[in-house]
Image (cartoon, rainbow, N blue to C red; front, side):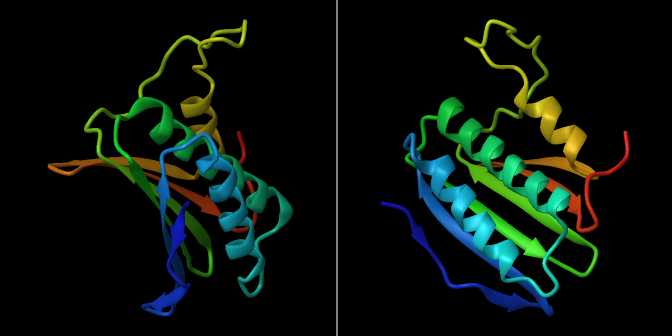
Amino acid sequence: MSSATAPHRVSAAPSLMVTLENTPEAAAVARDVAGDFLKGLGPPPGRDASDAVVLIVSELVTNAVRHTLARTCTLSLTADPGTVTVAVADASPRPPCERNPDVRGEGGGFGWPMVRRLAASTSVEISAQGKTVSAVVAREGRRSA
């Protein structure tokens, strides 16, 4: 079962951190947590921004489950007046990479480009403990193409 810490304020910005077991259910749990977090913001982000955050959460958690051998990953959400930041930390030092998408639907390759398109910015931090992949989403919605 996944565990979550209660939302708390850090520097007047609402934030949430959840440790998830790397199971097939982790992405669904993360989507629910993200949806609840977004609904609790005042004012909540627009629908496009909320949809983008939930999609990014789902993709980054799914990648942590699929591509690492760790037992857990950590989802962090932070909101400020103009953005929502999604960060997923896992024990693998391997950063996400561009791959040719598998149009047959068997091998993936669509997720990281989607995250980069939906986010205003992305970053990957490598440390001795693994990596943290972050994506910043503008609260007013998806950035223009």
